[in-house]
Image (cartoon, rainbow, N blue to C red; front, side, top):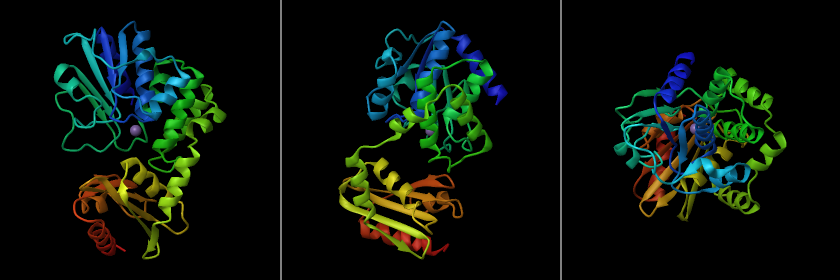
Length: 316
Ligand SMILES: [Mn+2]
């Protein structure tokens, strides 16, 4: 880790402008890490912004607690030669917030904790992709320790919330270091009360999800399958239902599927760790990690459900 931190600091020092970007539909992990790095770059007297194309609910949460002068939606003032583009929380050319930036800027740093796919960002000056890491927040927390940078309480709180989300409440990819990072954030003043209000959801969203959960059934005693057949869903809705199914007693493996556009079926897969979600996803047109993965299929929901049952049947 030490080497990564030293190299990152050195890279920031090397350029006048530091433009930071995360993935599309920003989450708290990418967003708070970007804001933190932007603050650090400014402390080094660099021109720095976090580039965003749209303001989703996570961005709004951050804006409520922060001055939003760090955020920008144009490349104005970031010249080709003297700008370092730092990509956090994705290594994919497709998912990066603004792929166009990768053809404009040639000095690129990628720091991520997702499995490297075929569409990973190439021709970079520095890359650190560690798919065993819980979150970029965990890495950035140790980075600020390393450079002895103090963050404000609201940012510490948002980071703790983001850490909790990325690990599904300290269940996925959680190591002793993940808890240490959480401890550091609490030491830096993260408020557990404010964190709860950040993580809270609207009544409508919770009731809507509970309605979705009613479509689930148990298969082979330890598998839960939930087929959503009323229109088009957000991929994040499917993921949240799959997460929730693992809270049900005895369930070790969960699948939630539905259409994400008029001809694409997405399958969110979650595992408590006894069965490999990644291997199952590979047979369902996708990939991921041991405990969290997703597949994509064409055709009908009935066909997709049958394919899932067949795939599960091969291992259970
Ligand atoms: Mn993340």
